[in-house]
Image 1: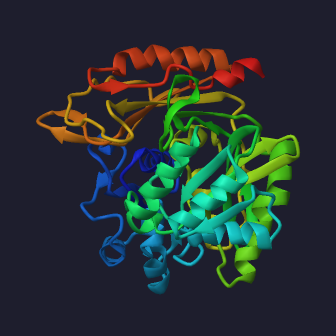
Image 2 (image 1 turned 135 degrees about the vertical axis):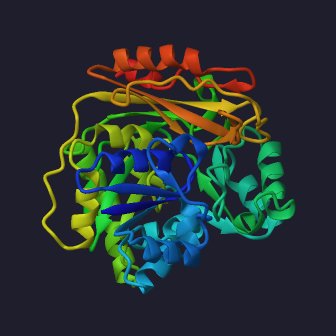
Amino acid sequence: MKVLIVGKGGREHALAWKSRKSSLVSEVFVAPGNAGMKNDATLVGISETDPIALADFAEREGIELTIIGPEASLVAGVADEFKKRNLLVWGPDKAAAQIEGSKDFSKQMMVKYNAPTAHSESFTVSQKAKDYIKEIGLPIVIKADGLAAGKGVVIPETMEEAFATVDDMLEGNKFGEAGACILVEEMLVGEEFSLMCFVHQGVVIPMVMAQDHKRAYDNDEGPNTGGMGAYAPIFDAQSEEVQTAVTTIMQPIVDGLTQEGMPYTGFLYGGLFLTKDGFKVIEFNARFGDPEAQIILPLLETDFIEIIYNFLTNKALPVIKWSKKFAIGVVLASEGYPDSPQTGYPLNTPTFNDEDELIFYAGVKDQGNSLVSDGGRILLNVAIADDFKTAYDKAYANMKQLAVPHTFFRSDIGHKQFNR
C-alpha cells in the first residue's frame, strides 16, 4: 500500500523510516517533510495544517493509510477531513485532540476521570494569577493553555520570575492565543517519564517507557525545550510499572473521552511523574512524542504498519514484540535554541548503517548540494546496542562527526540510567 505521513520533523522522519521497512508498504510520502528525509520517502509540498489539500492528495494518489505526526495538524482538523471522506487515517479528530490542544480541558478530564495529577488553577487575569502564586508560594509550574511547541512551560526559580512569566503570557502575548489562559500548578517531586500508547476503540496498547530530557543544557539546566534527547526502555511494555500507568492513567482518560463523545484513535502520550505516591500525569499529548518516536520505533520488532492498519480495519492485531536492546538519541540543536536559534549553517551528513546507528532529520533544508540548519532542533542522532553503556558511547562518538559551528548538544542524555 501507499502510506502518507503528515509533518516535517524528526518524528515524521522516524515514522517514514519505519513505514518504509514494512512488508505491506510499496511507497511512503511525507507532507511536507524536510530535505533530510529524501532517502526514506517522497516529499510532497503540502502544508501539514491544510486538511483539504492533504485529503485531495490522498484521494488523487490512492493513499491507503495516512499517519498524522504533529499536534498542529490534529488541532487543524486533518483527521476530521480524512474521516469525512472515508480515508483511513491514524490520529485523533479535532475534538479528542483537545487533550493536548487545551491544558485546561486536559486537566478537567484528569480530575473528572480520576487520573492522578498535580493540583492546578486556571487564570486569564494576571493579577489574580499573581495573588494565587503569592498565596501558595514556590515551587510551582506555569503553563500556557494552548500549543506552544513544547516551550509553554516555565518552572520559575523566584517570585519575580513567576510574576514576569505571568505578565509575558497574559499581558505580553508571548504565546499568542495559546497563552490567553494559563495554568498555575503544584510542582511534583520525582522522576519524569514518557509513555506512548496505540489507542483505538477503547483499546490501549502501551509501548516501552522512555525518558526525555526537556532542559536545554547539561545537568537539566536552562530553559525548557521540545526535548534535547531521550532513551528507552526505562520499563518494558509488559512491566508492572507500565501496566499500572495504563490502568490508573491512560485507560481512564481514553474511556473518559469516549464517554464525552470524543472517541480517541491514534498515539496517546502520557507525560508521567513517578512520585512517592506512584505515577501522576503532568500532561497528555495527542501524538507520538518527539524525540521519543525516534528511539522507540527502532525498538519495535513487529511490523508497524500492520499494527495500525489492522487496528483501523478491525482485523486481529499481530503479537507486538519489542527488542531487548537499548536506544539513545541525542539532539543536535542550533545555537540560541530554544529562544532565538541561529540557522542557515552547513552540516556534516555522515552515513551511518540504518540499523543501529541512525540520523533522523528535523530542522534542515537543501542549499546547493548540501544540508544546512533550518530550525531549532536540527537532527536526532540515535544509537542502539545490547547494553546502555555501549549505546551511550556509540551515540556520543557519532556526535563528534555531527557537531559543527553554531550548534550544540547535551553531553549527559541518559545520565540517570547509570545510577539505576
